[in-house]
Image: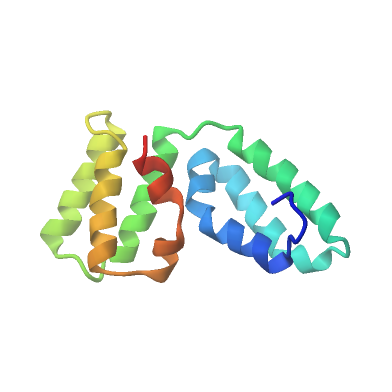
Length: 138
């Protein structure tokens, strides 16, 4: 993001791919940085915008992700599969997320189940999200 050749589209794509990671770190700042990046065309200087975006991004990422924020992300993602999953599958995923929230399952458990559903029921937006690979490695 700091190298030469940064474009408005490139910054927008970067932000789009990391939305769920950002949401896991800070919901309030996630809600602030979204409109900021959407207003990129209002800035006459891309380098000034990039510097301010980087400052805001680093501040947002300075907040450690919380179980509550991860749970929110997982429940949000679960909604994308609602039309495709049976009632039993939806309930099982909800229970897995709840078990993570309670500390009885690692974060990787619901993420692994979601990535299986993503393979079975492809979704372009979710497929581009770095959240799944980012936290599946833990």
